[in-house]
Length: 228
Image 1: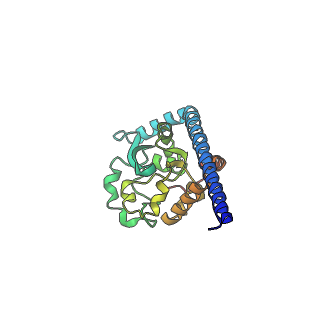
Image 2: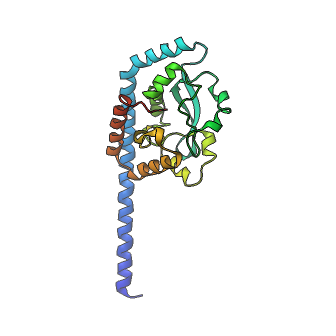
Image 3: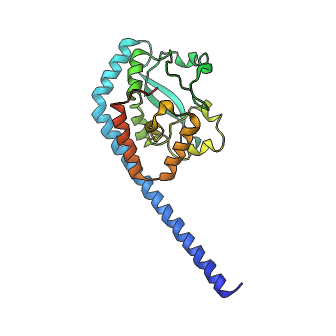
């Protein structure tokens, strides 16, 4: 090997090393900014929405006094870590027991269950789902660090069991209250397309893209009728 070849290889190696260090530093900054945005956004959201939390609590209890106000469910987060996710209860108390009889009516493909006219949904539940208000308690998950404001939808354990290694790439980051899938017409997006949207988001790695998704979500919450 000539001296010029050795020098060229060394320069190429150093260039790649600098690029890797630069990318690592950019990722560290993004993670810091994202967590800061999560904490501030969740705190502000909870304070501003406390009156709404109170109203929804009363409505849920008036319609169904037997069941709890909040629905707790085990979900799979970053690096397949399990956590308890919170939502306002939008279904009847025994919804999980009734699911087995409805699986054959699934209206989407892949490892996910969706049914537009799900008989388990209550009247209050239909409203809070349409407006995505049922998702607001997830702000607690954001403060705890289980979730982020923006990220892939947190899957169920039974869904992850059906994942391929490719699908599991969406679990490389924290799941989010909202994400690219949610603002892309989630009612009309199938599982495989959802995965592609999640991976597209992960590759972006951009705090301004997160902010864009948050504002787009707020706009949809006050004007969308297709969430289920």
